[in-house]
Length: 190
Figure 1 (cartoon, rainbow, N blue to C red):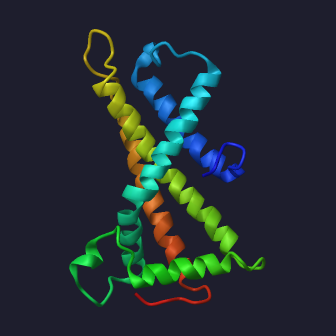
Figure 2: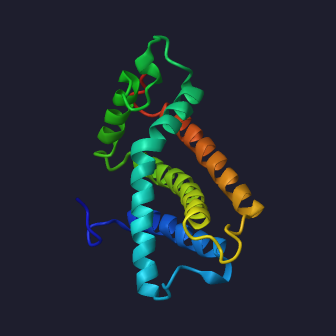
């Protein structure tokens, strides 16, 4: 298990920026009321890091398998074989496993372009996670911490637009990354 000392800079940024978005949107949704009884920068940093780590873990384990498979199918077409398990995003398909293994093998080659694809994938996941953080913060602010006297939070079309753009941009970037990845050594058919 990674600790704060062993996180790489991209990992720290990915978790912190996602959590920072969560804290900022939560504070925005509460208007001038901010976080209940929290004004310390150190406490806000810890909340941002913990929230970002949680959101990223949920995204990678529960949400992204479906989005990733959809991007792969859009890029390469749906597999020829049919069956219920082909629609279960939590059960990797043989082509997905082969792609993962090829990606891990490319990371062993220092001259490989895999490091650039990994950075691209980091950006994709950051876009997804910022959108999830925005949705989660708005939901929590609305349901558990409504503004005094209103019973709601500040709804913003700007936040709704930002979430929509972030999700679409993440999906399209993932789609393009998967197309590029197919032209690297060991492309495997679905």
